[in-house]
Image 1: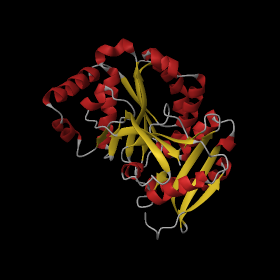
Image 2 (image 1 turned 135 degrees about the horizontal axis):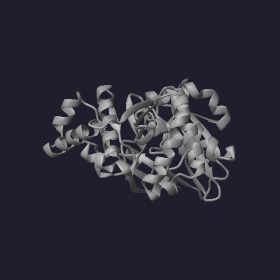
Image 3 (image 1 turned 120 degrees about the vertical axis):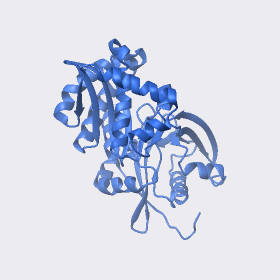
Image 4 (image 1 turned 60 degrees about the vertical axis):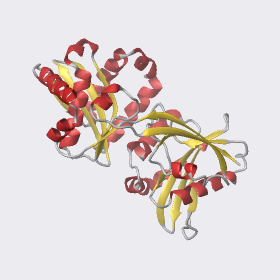
Length: 338
């Protein structure tokens, strides 16, 4: 911890924080790990859908002199005596304090100090979920720098495989093993031999028509997806997708057989990275591998766009590794403050 670095913590309400959206978004882009799950767009959609009592949210902005260097959107669950970062792991693949490199330790100590000063905080647990292994929080945990503040429990929660884009499509194929390279080419040829129609959806007019078809495809593809897609989550998806479309950060790669939607990949393009947020395909077209091929084409488009990376997001499905994904481990960290 650098004693010369002074961090000033400012607490705002959720409503007040909306006046700092530009500053918030600039911080996120400048941060060590920019991703859409910490954006105002994503958080706002979640809050509007799931939070009835806005007093449960404390927005903490951390400044070094006059520069915003960190932010913690805090959710307080008084019933279970938990403090966490806003969101939930079913809809958010990453949840951490937003920070600029070089300030994290000071920000986190200020965050813990702020909580300890709250009259209600005694006996509460800080419950950090979906923390990527690249987070500076691990340096604090692994070097015992939090010992004076909290007891720490940590366990692996999940993985988010990612492919770091490097080179052109042919380079990508050559880097795969011979069998996998052959399978990708074979599946692409079979898929392209059919008269399926491709449609790139980016604007709200097209999105309105698409979503009703997508949800039907989604719930019919697997029983667990049918259980997952509650009306409340559907409301969240609608708000979030329309908001990203307004910002020109949404790309939906959809494929049709006539008027029938047979496959779709929902991609959020953020900070020059493709995030594969959701997908669905028709089981009636399994013989054409429409689910896998649509993901291959999304990856190919990301490579051709010269993105930094293609993030497959949460889950260890086999296809992600066959297509070159390498794990970013996610962890759950509990801090029992002394």
